[in-house]
Amino acid sequence: MIELASMPAKTYPAAGSPGDEVSTVRPSVHTVLPSGQPAAPISAIWSRVPQLAELGAISKHALIQTADDVGAVSDTVRSIAAVLSTAGGCVEVVGGPEAASSVGPLRVRDVSREEHLGLVGLGSPARLTVPTLWFERVCLVTVVGLAVDGTRRFRGILDAQSAPLRRLGNPHSREQLAYEAHRLAASDLCVVCAYRDRDHQPLWWAISRSDVELDSFVCRLAGLNPAALPTLRELIRHEVLPEAGQVVGPELPRCATARIRPGAALDALGRMRAVARASVAEWTVIRKNVHRIPHAVRRRLARFGRS
Amino acid sequence: MSPVRIGVIGCGGHATLFQLPAVRQSSRAALVAVVDSDEQWCRKVAKRFNVPQWYTDARALVGQVDAAVIVTPNFTHTSLATMLLDNGVHVLCEKPVCTSVGELDAIVASADRSGARFMAAHCLRFSPNLMFLKRIIDEGWLGEVREIRAAIGGPYEQATHRTDFRRDRRAAGGGVLADLGVHVIDASLWLMGQRPVVAEYAAEFVRGWDVEDNASLVLGFPNARAWLRCSFTEFLSNTLTVRGDYGWAQASLYAASRLEVFNERLRPCRSDGVQTILCDGAPMFAGQIDHFCEFASGGELRVPTDQVRTGIEIVQQCYQTPLLVS
Image 1 (spheres, rainbow over the protein chains, first blue to last red):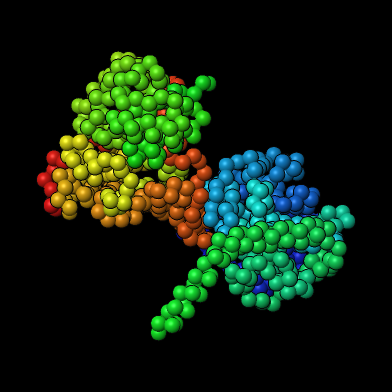
Image 2 (tube, rainbow over the protein chains, first blue to last red):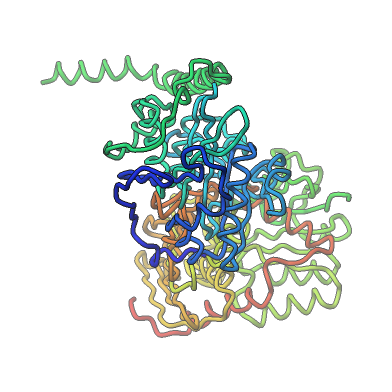
């Protein structure tokens, strides 16, 4: 269990020298493939991540959630699980049935088969169904994959965090769900695993305590304004993004800026559906109240006449 | 499983607003008869709820129904319940079940003799938000419970009632404490699962009725206290709040689907403050009837008789206490 009081304050390594470990002003970036040498085991990386060691020390129960089942991401999940379980803690993976085959012996918790709760959503007035496991006293780690040289647009930590909400069939738009997940169940540790698209070889990992910081960081690495990421654009409606610092990190060619975006049409359709639902709800309210307008005008005119 | 044939005794405001619609809607119950001493009114209610039989005497239900719901003025509860139980009819009796522990013992003895089953109608135990509250207390979401605060009531004139028996000590067996206070007393006993002592009791007779119309009560549990208020004169919050070591939860007693929770250890509260949980489940009266049918068919009872007895003892003890305010 996480004892919140004993949780250390956020600390980030100071700007360091480029090489096998590249530090930035905010999220730390680690790589095990320095300048074309053969890959070192992934587990070697975690000894250099103080945040993970701290979590492992204070948490007896950890949940790792991921929306990807690519080899590099699954390897990352397994190696993080190994670190977290060394202190005798219980580690489980949150995902769909497909996750079971990729994470080996780890127990997979499918939120669609578990108990859930209704909450009053903030970003949207509709009822928000959330997994009860969000109310458990656990440490939450989110791992996402980032295909470099690929054609897939980066979805990010915020999007991966909202996967349980999508699995529970919430009717909100993808961006709204990403905000609700950030609001209600922001991860204790976020990991982006960049991998080469052609052979799924891991390239580097960016790690942060903050989901927003990490998504903003990856956007900036790709030379994008963070507000270009739909999930961050939604978040800006409710929160102020962290200040842009100096971004130092590996190159991110053609990843987040890819022009071909399978699924973009579906996203647009989802947004249109959300707008349509909101319009119907608003129209219902307008229809209920429109008959009051003439009376209100008459009352005001009468008051004006009296005065 | 065939539905339980139910007769409802008493067709006043509470029956027509809550119990009859609940029995009507339940898939486990078949509403076969209504009983009321006012023949004309009884016939009208039977027609409105499409009930095949109506009677002016509860004894006519024997042999016609499997179970009965007693929704009559309080002073009639014991005699009706013992008569029905002696004749093998299962009984769901509105609160307050009776006005003394001796009467409750007589009812339980009748049930034991005949094998028929008796349940007290403490409807808050079937309210979805309070059921969820009980669950999170048991699961330790709030830590150890230290305090319960509950307030129930509103102006008497604004509540629906056909008769004014609640103003009459003989007919009601007590005032607002016996009528509304028992709800929050029972809820406290249920949520805490412990036997309390009466630490303080105060009552007011604002309108000069025969019975108290405002009452406040403090129950002392081993590690917690419950501050309970009930009123026939003013709008109270009609909420029940539980505070534990790590947080608190507040349930509305009437908007039965909402529960507000704050606990610094729960992730959603930690990052976003108080959360309003929307609880699913049948409305409390429907849930109560479903549970009664299940209990009448041999299921377990969720309203333990020893807690009902403790509730009656608390009310009795309060009425024997010299009043602090009058």
